[in-house]
Structures are given as structure tokens and as C-alpha cells.
Image (cartoon, rainbow, N blue to C red; front, side, top):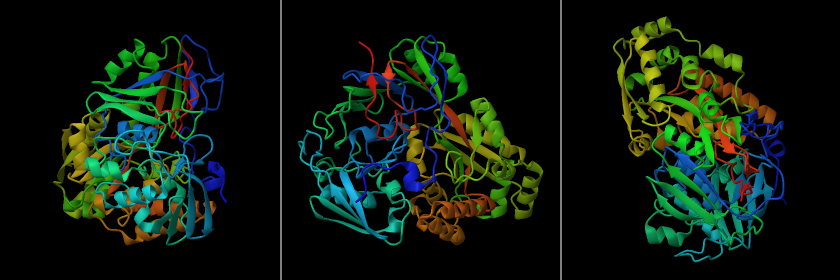
Length: 535
């Protein structure tokens, strides 16, 4: 039987670097200087109970639905309130049991998960604290399958069946050996929800009822969300906090001002300049880390037939100046991003990516002429928050250098988000949220069979077959070689999804917050033992 805790190295043996690889403390303005190389902890001492950590965002959650909302605000909040079959973390031990307290692999294709006897849904109507059983897992997975816009992270390709023979047992069956099964089951979008709540409210877009360590206290899309400690959580030792609170603010300047005034406890600086601007505030820690958020440019050939021609896609690719984007948007503090981001062990070598992304406007014009699209033009969609509009402006100028007429179509977040899910655009650019595996990044963007709801009008059977081979290869070294081969093929195809760059981020927090690890998911994916060392 498998243990409940398993290191990332033991499980995928080098398949991925931790989210915060390379994180270092760069300054503690007016406070203590840390010489710790490890990002795992921001302080020792005896944990204290109580207190609320206050945060802020400019990007509100589009909804509370854990299966469909992929905004940063929504993604960062759902794993505090929902339970999952297992936890796949970006800190410390890689794999933990959650609703499943243990599991066993019967053979290459069959798994049995044993449901924890003391996990219960929140003590709110209509579930009123009843126990979470195997049938809830089966119901939630079926709901995901039937919900438009829900991400199955490889589910349809590999899972041939699942069932709950009794309250305590959940079985999963795969078509072939599946190297990423725990990545799939531990995805933040595989939340376990109660059937009664869905039946009462119609869906989970405006309510959060789960079995996680916190319960939603209040929520408003335009003002924020507050969660309170769940007194009935199956772990009695954590969480230490009384709660967490996210406020929606107008812009980064408002967030920074609130942080300086001590009205919030964390400032998630998106670049080096913003981090430096608050590093002198007394009693704060500033940490630099890879957040695995990466920018993409998508060509929708279903709306612009010219994008079906690989020569046109190559011309667009050659016209893009990715390094200028990094320099202008992040003060040079970022890396070029291939089909798999540089945080992952399966990423192509940096020199190879740099060569593949060499800008050549003259060749771009020649390709457009040969393809008969000298007068190519299209609308470029983006959300009007963070650096999206600025990136779109750089792309617009890059492509105009090659004679391509680009009109920017910037929209409010929710409107843009709905268009993104429905692929209702000609081209799009955005910062993609961090994935828990290199496989999900590859499948989501480049497999035309994996995610047909996000189909961009270009089929590629060869790439599809290569991606399936990667997923079914359990040996890490062999899987890495196959991942390199498919990425090189993707680069030859030039999209329709072009990855651009992966910037570094900075996490600035008052040093009375203890025991957290900055990550794309806030204080660490499924990490609930942060505490406050303050009166």
C-alpha cells in the first residue's frame, strides 16, 4: 500500500522542478536578514493560533465554481475550501492523501483509494457537516465530465472508468499505464463537491461548500472573499489561522499603498521594480521565485483561415520579439519559454529555445508573400488588467514591422474570460496560470484530441500521437527524451499556440507571517500551516 506522503523526486524522479526553484531572499527592509537558501519556511518558533492574513488582487474571481474558474483569484482560493482525493503540492513532500487517506495500485491499470472516515463537508445547508464518502468523489468527477469549460487534465484520454463500490472505497481504471495519474487527481480543478449543493443552487458558481480547512464567510466578485477556519476539519492541528481575506482593489498602486499602510499583509509584486519599491518598508521580506505563469499568443485558425498555413504561423512567430517583452515588461527579469516552461526538468535547453526564437522580420515578410497573405490583419484579444494590454501593444508593433495589421481588442476580465473559454476571438494573448505538471501544459495547448473545447482550427495527428506516448511512458529518463522530441516538433509547427516568456515574481510580506512558501498558488499549494507571530 502506498504511503500518504511521497516526495516529488521519488514519484516523478526528476520530472519537474518545484514551483519556487531558485527562490532567494533578496532583502529584508528594516527587518531581519535571512540567509536561508530554502524557501520552505519564513521563520521558526512555536506556531500560534489566531489572526487573519489580509491580501489583495486586481483580478476578481469570475465565479466560485472550482471546476471552471481559472482566474488567479479563483484558483488561489478554491484549495482552501474544497477537499480533493489527493493533494499534489508545490512544496515539501510532493504527494499527500486528503479525502483518500491511503491507496494501492492493483496493477498497471487499476488503483484503489481508501476514503478517510473523518472528513466531512462544511456545517452549512444543505449538507450540514455530513461525512464525505466515495460516492461524492464519483459524483464530482462525473459533474466535471459533463460541465462545459471544466478542465479534465487528461481525464478523457486515460481514465476508462471509476466507481464507488461502497462509502469507503473509490476505484480508478486507466487504459494504459499513466505516468501523471496523481497530477490529474490532485489538480485544483478536481474538487469534491456535494450533490445536494449542486441540486439546490443549480451549480457552484455562487457558493463554495467543500470539506477543506476553511469555510467561505463572505464573497462578492467586485469586493473580495473572506474565509474562516473550519472547526470540523479532519486535521485538528491545523490550520492555525482564524481566516484569510482577499480584497479586490482598483489597481496595483492601490494594493501597494494598502501594503505600505499595513492594511494588508502581503504584496504580490509582479516584477522586480515593484518589489524594489516596497523593499525598504520596515519589517518585510522580499523573495524572488519562479511562479510558472507564462505568457502565450494564440492564433485561432477557426476564425482566421490564414493561420492554418504553417508559413503564416511561422511568419508571426519570427516577427515576435520575446526578449523585448521581457525587457520592457519585467526589467529583463524573466526567461524565454518553450512549449514546456523553464521551471520543469523536461524543458528544452535554454540555448535551443533562444535559437528557435531568433527574430527575423525579413523572412517573416517573405513567408507571408509566399503564402499570399501580404495584407494579413486580425484582432488581438486581451484582458484589460495586469500586463496584458502592455504585452498586446508590443505584439502589435512586432507584427506591424512584418506588415501585419493588428487591432487590439481589450476587454474587462469576465467578458474576456468568457470569450477565451468559448474561443470567441481571432487571436489572444494572456498569462497562463501555472500547471501542476509539464504534461498538462503540453496537452492543454498542443493536443487537438485532449481539449476540443479549446480547439484552434489546426489538427496535428503526429503531435497528438507523440504526446500520448509521453503520457504513457513511466520511466522518467525515457519520458524526458520523448518530451524533448515532441517540443521540437511543436516548434517546427509554430503554434497555433506560441509560448512567449516566463517572468520571475516577487513575494513581499511582513515578517510576522510564518511558515509559508511563495508559489503561484499563494502560500503554497494545499499548505495550511502558516501562522502569525503578532499580538
